[in-house]
Each structure stands twice: as structure tokens, then as C-alpha cells.
Length: 495
Image 1 (cartoon, rainbow, N blue to C red):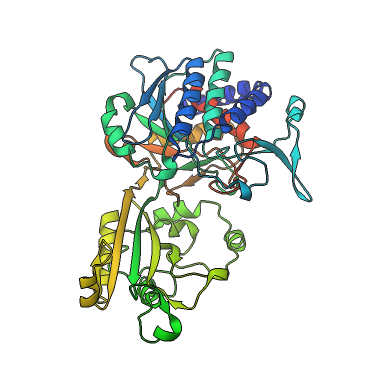
Image 2: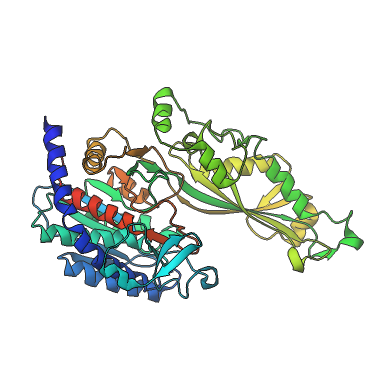
């Protein structure tokens, strides 16, 4: 009976919202255009400060108290509404920074100057912004850097607050917002910052609004994400590149040396064969059922990737994400293309990323890889080898280790999780997609570890948004979806 009453309450909220969103949509889009116009590459501190100034003005205008949190890197932005005594608190996490841009790769003059487009038979057609004054087509898209990742959800949140005020709705719990400024750079200052500002950030639950909806477009809840760490492996040939005619067959080629090392990491099915790499991971029937409930289309995934057969780390896509990965993200040795030259290269380098799951530890996996390489007779160093080392060892490999962003996974049966699922079901006829752990990484583990609170990701944006790539975009339909989701969450009492 209580659940029925809850659903009726949430449905009435959603119905009231639906009568207002059409009036709010143009203002939301205009505010998003203004926000996108501020460049936000995290490597440029001045640009990040301009974004923070914009946020400070916009949140204060909605009644939030704001604080700029200084860190070892770029500052974080924090905002909270006046406290509701004896009420629980939800902390919302989003990020302000975006990936760097190469304007030459974008189909518009300036990636920070938003463009409105509609799809037609010839691709994407640019529209005049004045069309927003009349009927708005939900399939139109706004193109610009960070439209979807992650400025769009921030603006949706702000405008949902406006709608709540217009409808005289009271938020029945405490609301806190933390906006990251170095998410696209792995948020290195975040762990120390969360520890430093622990009292300010304290909350009962954490909602992360980042990433796209499931490819089906259905409402999506994500209960975890993989972590990440990196290593860089470098092998050595002659001290300097040498003429391949004079020294081919004599000077060892670092490209062949490195390729032999890399080929020992996996079998022909793509499974890592390094001893202990998958230790601790067990997929039982209950977990497999949860994974299979995600409506992935295997044939469509293979077609999108243009591959005949996937690797066999898992028996299907969602199962594959439950294991740590070992990915060569880049290879370099000598020159290629028009600059190719007939030489024996001096070095060969492989840049590797490792996606982590809760059962795996980044330092442990990197150590397993290092020990695996040592067993093949390599002398391992973390510096450029000295001349003495080069003359003493036949096989030398430099092993450089990157920082670690830890994974997380939240219990899907928590009352908070069921509360969110019921909210989303109240305004959507589509089945809710529940993902146990997603493949990508959100640097959120410091909040979970330090504050000891459950975290759930609620994506807002279209799955084909080109995040991190040229021509990033946000579908207007997803702006409506985000407004509705924030509005209903913020107006529904916690159970």
C-alpha cells in the first residue's frame, strides 16, 4: 500500500511538471548555450575559474550557498540549499571540465559556440536558433563541447530547481552539489580534497549525473563503474636509430622485443593469461541473471564495432565488464607513413590502460604484470637505462606506472536504489535498465570510501552524443528527460 501511495505521489509530481516543461525548455537551452560558450579544458586554469564564476552566479540566483574548495589542483565548486533540520541529505556529483578540442575536426566554426542541428537525408542540417521560439522538435540536437559531458546535466538541474519554485514545491531533504573541475584528467586532487572537506560534504546518499543512457534509450540506473590505472612499457634497441641496411640483422629491434612481450599477456580469445589476474571474481547464476536483464543487442554491437567475433573474457557484453581489462591504448616506435625511414628504432613504447573492478586491486595487477615480464628474463627499471645497464643486460624494459582511480559497486537492493527505480518508473512506460557496473570510469570512489555512502549513477544524455570526440551533442529530448528526472527526484520524499 505504501508503495502504491508513493507511486501516485511521484506520478502527480511528474504530471504537474509535464504542464510546465514546454515553457521552460527554451530558457534551459539558452542557459546551456551560455555555459558552453566558456571554454573548459582542465589544463587551462583561467578558463576553469571563469566556469566557476558562472556557476557561482547561477547557483546563488537559485538560493544556494556556494563555496569554492581549494585543492592541490583546480578548485572544486560546492553548493547547498538551506538545511532542512533532521532530514537526510543527497549529494549530487557532476563535472565542469571537458575534453580538449581540435576545431579542425568539428563540423562548425567553434566547438564552444553552440549550433542547433536537425538530421536529414544528407546528414546534419544547421538550424536558426529563432526556431526555438515556436514548436521545438525533440529530435533536434545542440552541438558543442561539453553539451552532454557534463554541462548539460548541470543546467538541467538548475532549471529543475526553477520549476520546483514555480510550482511551490518543497524539497523534502537536504541537497548538496559538488562539481569536479578535473574529471577529464582523472581528478587527482579529489581524494585529499574529500578528506579535507569531509564535514562539508557529509551526506546519506550520492547521485552521480554523468555518462549516457543505455543504448536502448530507456531510463538507466548504473550501480557501479570500473576504475582505471595505466602503465607504459618501453623496450630498447641501439642507443640511437641506426641504418637498417648497415645494422639490420645485428642491432636488436625494440619493436620486435616489445611485441613478443605484449603477445604473452593474452591468449587467442583475448583472455589475460598472467597468473592471478582474474582472482576473486565469481559470476553466479543470480549475478548472471542481473547482467542478462540489460537489453543489449549483440548483433547491433558487433555491427557498430564492425567485428565478427568478440573476445571471450565473458560470454556476453555485460559479463565482460565484470572483469579487469588489459588494453594497449597506443604503440610507438620509429616513424610511419610519409615520414617512414629505413632504420632500426632506438625504442618502442606501449601505453596500456587497465580497467579495474571491485575485486581487483590496481597495484596488485600492475605487480603481477611486472613479475610476468621479469619471468621472461627482463631487467626492469623505472628510468632511462644507463650506459652501464645497457652494456650489462640483454633485455631491458622500462616500466612506468600511472595513478589509480578505484572502482565502486553499490548493492542494487538498497532501499535508496529501489526509491530511485520507483521514481523513474512513475513517469516512464519503458523498462528501467539496471547496470551492475559500467565499463567507463567516474572518479567517485573517494566519496564512497571517505563518506561511506552508497552511490548510484543516473545518466541523462543520449547514448550517441560523441562525448570526448568532435561534434559532441545533446538531444533536446534528453534535456526534457533530465529536467523531469531531477524534478521528480527533488520533489519526492525519501522512504
